[in-house]
Amino acid sequence: MKAITLDTRHFYGGEHHDSFGNKTFQSINPATQEVIATIPEANEQDISAAIDAAKIAFKEWNQIDVITRGHLINLIADAIEEHSEELVNIDVQDAGRPILDATEDIEAVVRMYRYFGGLPDKIEGVTIPFGNEKLVFTKREPYGVIAAITAWNYPLFNNTAKIAPIIATGNACILKPAEETPLVALRLAEIIANVPGIPRGLVSVLNGSGETTGNALVANSNINKITFTGSTQTAKLILNNISNNNVKNCTFELGGKAPVVVFDDANIDGAAKAIAFCAFFNQGQTCTAATRIIVEKGVHDILLEKLKEIASRIVIGDPTNEKTTLGPLVSKAQYDKVNGYLKRAIERSEKMVLGNERTLPTIGYYVCPTIFDNISPSSELFTDEVFGPVLTVTTFEDEKDAIRLANNSEYGLAASVWTKDIDRMHRLASSIKCGIMQCNTIFCEFPGAPAGGYKNSGYGREFGKEAITEYTQIKTVWVSYSDNYLDWV
Ligand code: NDP
Image (tube, rainbow, N blue to C red; front, side):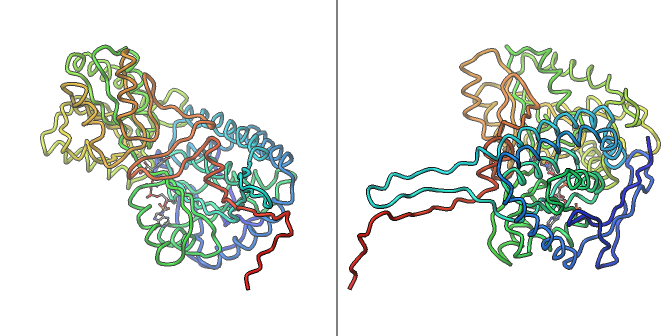
C-alpha cells in the first residue's frame, strides 16, 4: 500500500487551514499499530471560521438552479470513481478494512451520489385547498449549515450517507468524522471542492474528539441541524447538549442488535450463508449486523453446524491482501471492549462453540469469528451491541416466542426472518419492531430505500426521498388574491 500523504489540517472554504488551537491526536493503522497521521483538533474558533465559509457556500449553492445542482452532484460521483484507488488505500490503512470490502464501498458511494444527484428537481411542496380568496402552498427549504457527526465503521460510506443528501437538498455540510478514522473525509472534501462549479466551502471537515469538537458543533447556534451516526449513549449526550443551549432538529442513526429469526421450513443453507456474511463482514462492526440468531429447535443443530463451517473458512489477516475477509477491529479501545465481552462470557460459562482456535496475527487488533450457543435473553451478549465478530444463537418454542425474543431489545434497527410460509413471514414483518425488516434476505442497502431505527436505534431516516423530509423544512405561504380586508374596528 502507498503511504498516505494527506494535508491533515482542517478543511473549509475549499482549502486547508491551520488550527487556532494546538491540540492534536493521532490516527493509528489497526493492522500494524503504527501511527499514520497526526491531526489537529478543531476548537470553537475553528468551528466559527468553518461556519462563516459554509454560509457563503450555502448562498452560492442556492443560486444554482436545481438541474445544475443535480448535475454537479453527479460530477462528484465521477470524481470519486477517478480517485477510487486512493480512497480505498486510505480506508484500508485508517480503518483496517479489508481491501476487498473497501473497494466494494466505492460502488455503493458512487451509487449514493448518483441517486442524490437525481433528487434536487424533485423537492416539491403541496397546494392546500383553502377556498376562495387565498392561495396556500408549501415550499421545502434547506436548513442552511448542517453538522454531520459520524461513526468509524464504514468511513467513506457513512460520510457519504450524510454529505450526499445534505447538499442535494441545498444545504452546506460541516462534517466531524470519528477520531478513529479522520482521514478519508479530508480527501473526500478536497475531491468535492475541486469539482468545477461546486462552491468551494460547501463541504467542510473538522476533525477532533466528540468531547471537544462534537460538543462545540452541537452547541453552536449557527449550526441549524445535527445529523448523527453513532451510539445511543452519545445521542443522549447530544440531546442534553442541545436542550442546554438551543433548539434544533436532529437525525439519529444509532446502534442495533439485529434479531434473525429462522423457522424450521426456511432455506437453511441460504440462511446460514447470509447470516455468516452479515455477522462477520467488516469484523462485525456494522449497525445492522446479524448478531442475535433466534432459531426454531428443529433446525438449530444444522444451522449451527453450517454457521461454524462458513465462519471457519473466513480468511483472517492483513487487510491489504485481496484474499483477506476479516481484518482487525478499528482500534485498541474497540479490541478491548469486544475482548471484555468474550472474557466475561467465558467467566459466566456461556457456551462458546467457535472462537479462539485460530492463530491470529501477533500485531494488530484481531478477534476470531466467534459463535455462542444457547444464549439466554438476560445475557449481555444478547442485549448489548458488541460491535465485533460475535454472534449468539438462542432457540425458540413457537412463533409467539420468536416474536417475543426478537423484540426483547432496547434497539429496533434491522431484523430478518427466514421462512417459506408467506403468511407467517408477513405476521413477523408486522410484529417485529424495527425500521428495516428483511424477509429471506439480509444486509439490504440501497440509496432509494429509507433506513433508520425504531426505539433506541434513533429517529429520522437516511436515504430515499425521506432525505427530503430530513434535510428540508417546510414553509407555508399564504397569498391573498382578494381585496376583502377585515374591518376589525
Ligand atoms: P460514538 O457514539 O462513540 O461516536 C460517534 C461520533 O460521535 C464520533 O464522531 C464521536 O467522536 C462523536 N461524539 C462522541 N461524543 C460526542 C459528543 N458528546 N457530542 C458530539 N459528538 C460526539 O459511536 P462509535 O464511533 O463508537 O460508532 C459505533 C456506533 O455507531 C454503534 O453503536 C453503531 O451501531 C452506530 N452506527 C449506526 C449506524 C446506523 O446507520 N444506524 C451506522 C454506523 C454505526 P469521537 O469518537 O471522535 O470522540
